[in-house]
Length: 262
Image (cartoon, rainbow, N blue to C red; front, side, top):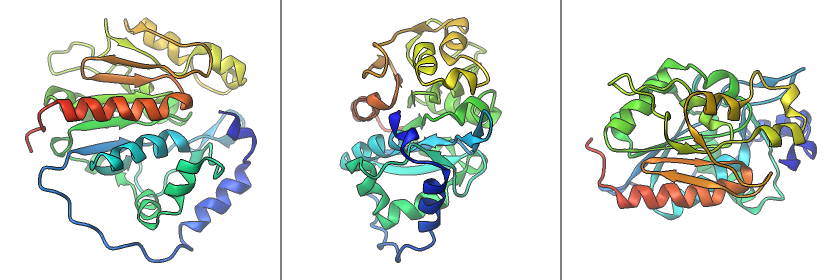
């Protein structure tokens, strides 16, 4: 997550401005009738601590999405408020993020995310809760998000979350009233990683602790190392270093399961 120190708010503001300056998007290609579809959710919350940028972590969107695209999946990007979401960790030295950012279609989709309340969970084979610090505010106890997660899971779909994205799984219940994560193996950005980047002073609570307190069986790699945990149809990644492998795990799980009834 060292890219946060390389790009200040002014850099991100300039990048966002580029959304309106890009050329026309390429023509939409018709989706295959049997194409798998993933709902990728990002945060709308724009600040942490004393006004520092929050939102979603850019490579935690771009790296999995590139894997999904290569697999032929259809992707919808949604956020609690819809429209252009705030983002952090924007580094065009990352070749994946650079490729995605220079794709007019991706920029157009990012600039006009689907409002979460307008998302129809019956359309999706999987959901991804993208990390960044914003989810620590607007994914937590978000009834709309919890409902979509539960609906996709109970329809046989894949529920996935990376880094701080698992904040959206806290207190998520299935129709039986059972917790989605109690007794399940998972991971997230760890308490040690928060302290190492001094983010522990900026976030409203410790995500690892909250997940453990909710009954999850928490697993972790050494700080800032790749760790992906697969527990049936629940897939989680620890941190930005996990983003690519996380996308691969989600892709494998979606391809292994039957399409969700639409």
